[in-house]
Length: 302
Image (cartoon, rainbow, N blue to C red):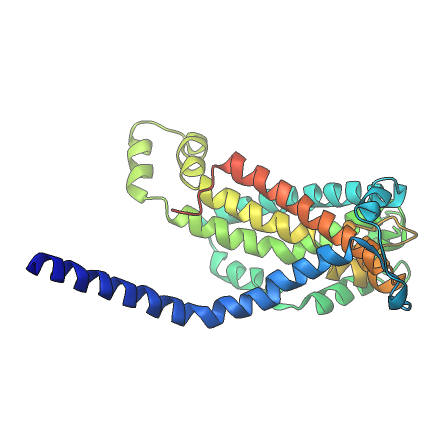
């Protein structure tokens, strides 16, 4: 009898603790629901309609018609391919530069402390400030980049004003602004590698390259892929730098999927079409992120 009363008391206490937790979490969950789930649901709902913003009374349900139209439109397919190319350019360069600089910083060579401080500067700049600064530098006539090219006897370039150079030029800006994040993540991961392991490997005759490939990289693999995951997601939906530098131009040479979505939603005011494009962009990011998580064996439960 006493055991039953004790078990009932424990069960009551557990229920009270669970109720208290949900009471504390409830407001936060409700706010997250309002600012995350509802907009997504509304976007999915809007994507099922032929919805021209100046004439909301003429909404017409088309089901998946907007999605089918998008996958038959060459401009959308080109923007999708351009987004993938842009993402590969930026993330690959950021990863190589970020890891290389992080290795240099762990060497404690002369001037590394000063370099760490300088490295943070791009992160401190807002996207608008950084984009306008680079836009001035990219000017074909007044830009400092073409000035230095002329000094070196190299022909001036069109940069963001040339169809073939626009997307790579934007990639340079995004890489310059985002690489410090990769450096900090990789640097932190490398610092977590025990000195004792490296010393033991050195005593066993392992070279610096062996230590890098067989010890450091395997140990920081989760950190490595998490950094790539975050930057891939951020780059795939990148909008600010492209909008300020080129607005998707010249023509549609640098029009990524985020710019395409923006133009259709707020330029052409085709809200249903733009919403469908936004959903496809989200699915595209989700698929790429899932592949990275699978390749890196990332387990967020640990």
